[in-house]
Length: 431
Image (cartoon, rainbow, N blue to C red; front, top):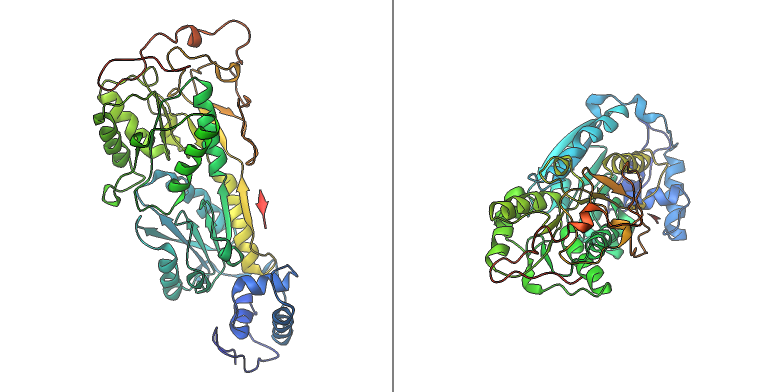
């Protein structure tokens, strides 16, 4: 009989009526699924003694990887649990349809669990597995650091999706797929600084945040410092969990607080699109011209950001690519033909109508045209800091020679001075 996970193995049958899975081997050996997967795939990170024990148990159980086994499962008996962090964030809603299609194509059903912003998604995953007995788990968003023992208690293969990083001590236990958030914030900083902006305000996550928002904020401040731009700490705002972070209302309320400070800024950077949309609404209501007075940026590339007026300049997360890579990794782990890995996708900047040159600024040629519609700026390697993004996938020409109307109209509106006198601004796959 197979021993329960964590107990000594007392022997295994040499044959079984049901097909043997890597979960059976993990339970028999008292190790995690990731360890079994690495051992069976001859990957690094497993001691010789543990590998030998796993291989012996697999042989005794007549384990045989079958890449076609998924087609033999019925929808009723196989499910994937998807835990969506932050139900108020429309970004994750855009994942649900393509994710469910990808899961159903493989013969599984999708069970959606909504996770409130302040709740521990790993503990909820453990409870969900105990109740619904899924074949795998996908985390849509969540905290970037978890206790190693908690991750070991997840009894099925899982993938962390859109989660920026995991503690190095736990990376061997899980897989992840994410965009390079730090590189994305460098694209935002470069775009605004190249437009002549030097006075930044930032709307960040809640004060207790342990998710990607905190990392984006840190990356933005570092990118600005590297370009010689210091961000006034009084213009970096964080809200409370009670405001429901990553919601329109959160962005709206924080922008109102920012306006009440009566401090000068010409660019407002937001750690997500939904915050940016709420903030932009508050600015416009207060008589601020976006982008003539203040340029506004977001992050995520949600559909809604293309239909606001003005449309939001944002970093795009490629949803379909993230879904494809997530499912590729997860179902490989389920079939025992893959091993844990970490995918990092290069970000892309989509320039909308919400950013424009700062008053009196000297504009770099690569970003001198303010488009009438959104366009994509090429992605950059995560380890590089571009000084001028290269235009790509655009039907609009790059300005050459004479200044464009956008440049010549740089004096069309004053730099934002909220209170007081107005003034012009200074011009990878990782294993």
